[in-house]
Length: 408
Image (cartoon, rainbow, N blue to C red):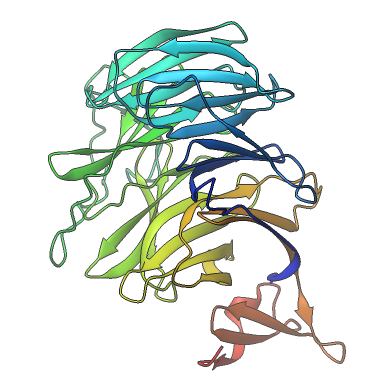
């Protein structure tokens, strides 16, 4: 069983009175772009060097989105109704596009050939991009009906293959997952929709609100709705598509307790589980594209403290492997799990954007094994589990003591 240990850490301070604190930021291909409240663009191309800082002019609205486009070597900036690109080398303006839409969410596709926005009018729109123009291509209502699925295969409804179709067909005797019952006081998340692309760019998922409930819906690249979940009780607004897989990560709040909800691409619940060691209430989750690792951002509003925790799945169980602590006065804007070129995928890179600085973390997965015998030490948050590897290949099935460490 692998444990996760810190390997490297870098931090760059950004906060200055004349620039103002960071308001939004994004990581893409070793470049971090951030926008401050005073409309300054900060570009961190190398974590060892000082950032390039430039005042942004040319956009009338409040700057809410920023991203480095690696394929075009451009900086993309957007307000609620404007898009603009700039050359990274000299920050000259390239393309300006104004719309009559009010944009509340935006996400580029992985190949950087276009981006999807959600509007205040409850629409989802795809804009195609090249170096000279931005053009609207596809449009769909967020609450559009999805095709009635056709169930193929054997076993229960949750285990069957599910494809989109227009025929209304139901196999006789098929058992479907029982409806999830409400528990405790309902928690209403009327946050804007959130968008996440699959790694190959052929599908995207949107987590959106309708009638005080939240739903997960999958679209293809033409913005044709394919699948939609049932209303999951107290589902939060965050959503993350596993880049090279079929899983979609969300969170829910159940009677004040944090829960992670994993959907399949067909929007059926694959698994849900509590994360009691996560402090505060969850605000956002992100899947790693290559490894079964989830990063969770949570906030203890009473103590005004924030946390990022890393969970790793092994042997059909999720283990808490690392926790980052951010005290009062530091506000996390976003965080990114970074793909690596490591063939065996034992490195985890995490970039954290706060209102005052940017952090680069590198962790590595490592096995803690006794040199005298075959005892394996497994870390699960504040618990240490000891297994005799001689007994079995899967350590968690034969665990000797489980020690709790309360004062870490």
